[in-house]
Length: 132
Image 1: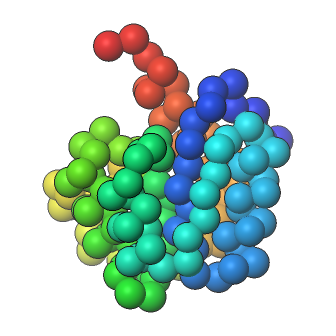
Image 2: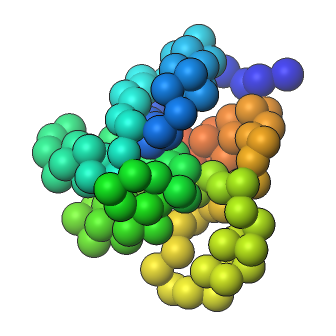
Image 3: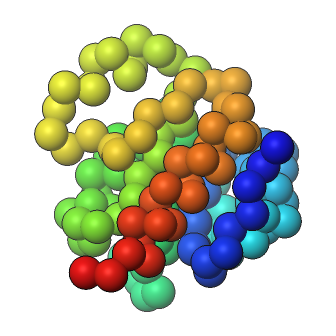
C-alpha cells in the first residue's frame, strides 16, 4: 500500500516513455508530491539549472540526449543535497556504477515497484525536513 507524503516534497521525473512518466507522475501527485516530468536528459539538466530546485530527482538511466548518470552528476554538482533515485532495467549498470562516489543516492530496478519508490521518497522527504 502506498504511503502518503505529508510534505510538499517536489520530484522531477525524467522518463522518455511518455506513458510511464505520466503514470508515475499521476501516482506521485495522488500521494501528495509536487511532480514535474521531462522526457530526456538534456531537458532535465535545463530544468535542474533553474529555480525552484526539485527536492528529488527520479531518473531513468537510459535516456535520449544525456543518460541518467550525467543528469544525476549535473544535478548534484549544482545542488549537492539533491536526492537522486536512478531507475534502470539494466542491472549490470547498477553493478558497474555502484562503487563510484558520484553515483545516485538510490538505485532501483525496472520494472519499478511503486511501493519501493514511495518508501525511498518518504525517507528522502524525512531527511529534507529534519532540523539541521
